[in-house]
Structures are given as structure tokens and as C-alpha cells.
Image (cartoon, rainbow, N blue to C red; front, top):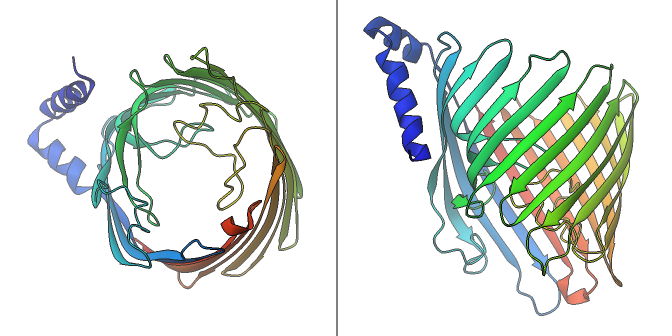
Length: 362
């Protein structure tokens, strides 16, 4: 049976098993959430490259039913609208078929003390699987201090509030399978191992160790891919980071290295979570070695962050500086300013970018 059709069948069977008062209660006691975002960016390019920029608005809306014997249903939408562009196609980068609205979530879920299962369009946040997926994801929590995620995704979409929407697109011809195991039985320590398989394209494996206490933390991880094509080199990535907190200050220092011939290979096909820079154009390139240093400061509703990163890829180098300031005017309304400076190997590719975000959530 078609996978999309099977989700509809499950929903119909579930609803048909309820009486009218139960159906009314489940939907009337559901919760609505959403956001309204205004975003604008201006990029000043060096050399003969024209300056770029755009402004846009975004509205997100989500609804989740009340819990009934462990079952829930949820839907989510986002609509983005372009207001202005400095140059034609700055907003969509030439993708003229972009959607102006997207239903990024539509799922049925079940949860008890031992496992949960979500079927349909959903947001996923794993090391190499991010954004929104048409997926079947099961989470096993029956083992103490251990979480096991097993799932399959057919398609991926991007529904950000600060960029053009990207419709659901196939992940190869057969989708992607994932097994992700995380153990947190020791205070402050997280041990994570994972396996992904994209049939006929690649499979990849990785381990990650996180440790954090009130003043100190570190992360180490390594992942590698076995590419399916005989002409493609296998990829790999290594990350090491130490961080600390003192009073209202935070500091992190890290290093990222990729395979000399293939970079990270196909590992970012379904999303990624390692690149620490706002742009980080070369971090995943072949033979890339990135050093980065970040510092943060928080005072009441104001958060300030700065980061410097330098990536040497082959015989070339790209440096990047990020400054981010966020102020929470109320619990629901915030303003954020972002500044990015990129010093590229080719001086004509240098640029400065400034972005301003106003966000209201409900």
C-alpha cells in the first residue's frame, strides 16, 4: 500500500473507533501555536559581484490535538512572502518553482512509557537528519537511561522563517533509514552512536560523546561514509570542542576536519548539525580543517555572541567572523541582529552581511 495512503487509513481507523463526544473533546482541547516573523538581509559583495539582499515576512501555524489514550494528531504550516530584493532572484537564488506556503507537518503519533511512534510529516532533529521529513520514526525508551531512535524518511523539506521555502524532495530513490542510540546513565555524560543508510548512495556511521557540568563541557565525534558509487571517495568528519561557563560568560573552542579527497561525502543529504558558523561555506569541503572560537554574554533579556572561524581547505583559506545580538522585549516578542564577515581566498568573494529579525510567537 502507498505509504501516504497508509497514514490516512490509520487516521480513519483511529477516528472511527471514537464516539462523537470523544472526537469533540480531543479536538476542542487541542493546542494552537505559531509565530510571525519579519526578516531582512543586506550583503555587500567585493569586486565585480553585485550587492544582494531581500526582505520577507513569514507566518507559522501549528495545531495539535489533545492526548487520547496515548494518541495525538498534529498539523503545521508556514507561509513566506517576499517584499523586496536588491537584485532579481536574490530571495530564491534562481529557484523559480519555490512554494509560498507549505504544510510541513501532518502526522499521527502514539506514546507510552516504553516507546513512541510518529507517522507522517514531522520535524526531526538528529545529528545527520534535520528539518522536516515525510517519515516513520519510532523511539524506544524501555531501557533505563537509553533512547533508541529507529526510522525511515522518504522526503525532506525546509520551512525556515528567514529564507525561501523548499518543497518536499525525494531522498534518493528509496529514502533514508536511521538507527540512533543515546545513553545518559552517567550524570552530565551523553554517549551517542548512529547509523544511516541511503540505498545505492551511501551508508554512514558515527559516534559522539558530550559532557557538561555547571562550568565545563566538551564534545568529540567522528563519522565516516561508505559511498555507493565506485567513482566516489568515502567521506569523514572529526569534531572536537571544549567549552566553559563563568558567571554570565560562555566560551567555546573547537576543531573540525574532513576527508582529504571527499570532504563529508553524502552525509549531509538529510540535514546536518555540526557546522558552527553562520555561513561556514567551506567547513564540509574536502581536506578542510576549521578552527573556531566563540564567546557569549547574557544579561537579563540581552544575549550577545561572537565567533571567529578559519577554514583551510587544500591550499586555500577562508575566514569568517559572526556577531549576534538578541533582545527579548517580552516573553513573546524578540529582536535579533546578525553580522557576518567573510574573508575568502579570492578577494572578489569577500563579503559583509547584515540581517535583522523581528519575531513574535504565540
